[in-house]
Structure formats: structure tokens, C-alpha cells
Image 1 (cartoon, rainbow, N blue to C red):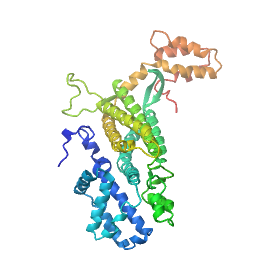
Image 2: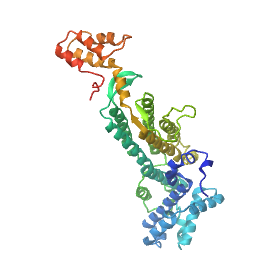
Image 3: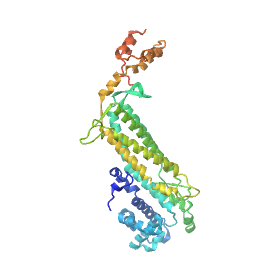
Length: 447
């Protein structure tokens, strides 16, 4: 049955479905089932390759067929079949095991089906499937959207590299800067956090009921199961955590979520700055025919894309915060609270994607209003006072800060004319006066 987005409880699967549909292949119930089957299948193949004597009848030539039948050609009908089994088992991983045993029957491999899930506990499957699906969602969906956003910002930073702009510290006029540089502050912050995020491994737990390979070792004591576990998990592109309890300790997962939180926080900061620049008329927004800015005020073009981005980054961060704080905490060798929480990891990722798409839309609509930036600079000649007093310090002029303070803190406007007149009163050489008069809010932008 087609998914009815108008009936969705969450906007992730409703209003914003067009932005999040790609994530269903990683975080949906069907996807989780497929990833579990993938882990169980690859584990069975790894046991064959070990080899376990009882599996010697499964030729390597059949591995491709096993993968195709089990998970590569996995369908929604297969997912529904697993869920039907779960109605009886009331256990999701056991339902996967029984489904796979039926598939082995159909392949004429029924005699080997008790080696499906051999020696494992559910968390060997869940705590390997989850980091695998998260890593692939990260690489194939989330990172590309982040890099698309970075590319937009990098282009704007380059295009506006030499545009002078009045800076504001504490909301007050401050030493001028350049628009491109202010955007580049954010790109460099984002790249630094992406570098840190890349250092966090996607870690899996794989070691039996309480992490000690008890069942494996009692059945096959001559096999080095720790090496087997390390190599098996590495073959999936993951890092095996050990020692563990029954579950992955989730410390690396918490670090990953915290890394995404920092990226989102930077982008909230960016969204608020662009929102402010729009309110200051530094940017105008492209108008699309038929769009309405306000239901009551026809003249308005609201910066809704930056507001939507900020809101969704905030929701994502609230959920990431809970995930990173809760998941590493478990009573003794295991309680079940991590299970229901892990089912929600796709939700903050989805809100992050929604936010990134909103931010991209907002950035693509801004139009630089350079006259507004120039007018703001012209209206704030007082900001060159820092430059003048610094050169006067260089020249050994007595109390230059206090002299400029008296000039700039009057109730009268400070203009190019008043600055020049003040410079003429200074007891310095004509060469220094010329140097001071050459300074303006438009060129006092540093390096």
C-alpha cells in the first residue's frame, strides 16, 4: 500500500518526505530487517570460510546466490513475511532467523540452517547492523548534503571576498570586515568538525550473549573466535569493540552524534547571521511568482528558509543530545532501553537533512544589496578611530585613545569631514596626516 504522507504523524514522513525519502533505505523497519539479514548472511559465509567442518558442503560458488536470495534482492514482500513471523515469535531478530531458515530450505540447503544465528545473541546482529546502516547513510546521504551546502558557502565566500562590510560586536558598529571572510569563518569551522567526525569509528559489538564468545568457544574451543570476530566485523567496514557486555557500549556512537550536534550548532549560528543580514537589508531575497510572504502583509518576503533550517537543526540536536547521553548507559550487562532508542536514530538525521535543504534554499535565494553595506559604512566613520589611535601610538602621540574617545563619543555624527578636521588638529607631520586621512571604513578591513 502506498505511503499516505497526509496521514503521517511526523513531518519527517509527511510534509518533508521529499527530502527524507532516501533515508528510508537505511532507517525504516524494512531497511533494518534487510541489514539484519545481511549481517546474518555474511556471518554464515564467514563460518563457511573459517571453515567449520559441518559447513563444508556449502561451496564458495553458492555464496553469491546466498547473498542475492537473502538480502541483495530483498523486497517489501520479504519484509512483510518477516513481520508476519514476528507476530508469532514476538521477537524481531528471531523472526529474521526463521525467515532465513525458510530461504535455506528453498535453496536446498536445509541441512545447514541451524548455523543461521549460530552462537549469537540478538545484539550481535543489531549492534552490527545499526552501525553499518548508519555508516552507509552517513556516506551516501548525509555527507553529500553537507558538502553541497559547503560548496554553496565556498562560492559565496569567493564571490564576496572583497566586499567591505561593517562588523558588529555586541550589536554595535565595529572595525570593518569583508563579507566573504565572514562566510569563510563558517566554512572553516565546518571543515574542522568534519575532520574530527571522520576520526570517529563506526563500532560494532560481536561476541555472543555477554561478549565472551561463550557458546562459540564451548562448541569449537580450538578456534580463535576473538580473531574471527575482529576480521568479520572489519570485513563490513566496521571496528569491533571489545571487551563488551551483551551490547555495544555506544561510546563511539555518542561521539558521532555529538559531532553532528556541533556541525548543526555552527549552522544554526550561520542561519541566524544570514537572517540578521536580511533584516538589515544587506541581502534581498529572490521572489518566486505565486509565493506568499505573509498572509496579512503583501509586501513581506520572510526569511523562512533560514528559520526552518534553525528549527530543524534544533530538533535534531535535542534528539542527538538524548541519544549520546542515554545510549552509553546500561544496567549491568544489558537492559532493553537502548533497543527502543536506537530505532529513532534516523529521526534526527532526517531533521538534519531537512534543515540542510532549507538552508541551501535560503542561501540560493539571497541577493547581495551592496549599496546597503556601503551606506552602513558611510554612516559609521567612527570605526576608523581604532586605526587612527593605533598609528598615533606608533608615533608616540600622548593619550591617543582618550583623544579619539572624546571625538567619537559625542552626540554629533562622525563623518569623513569631522575625521579629517580632527586629523588637521593633531601635532603630527603632514606625512602622518596624509596617512591617517587615507583611512576610511571602506578600506580599513585588515588582511
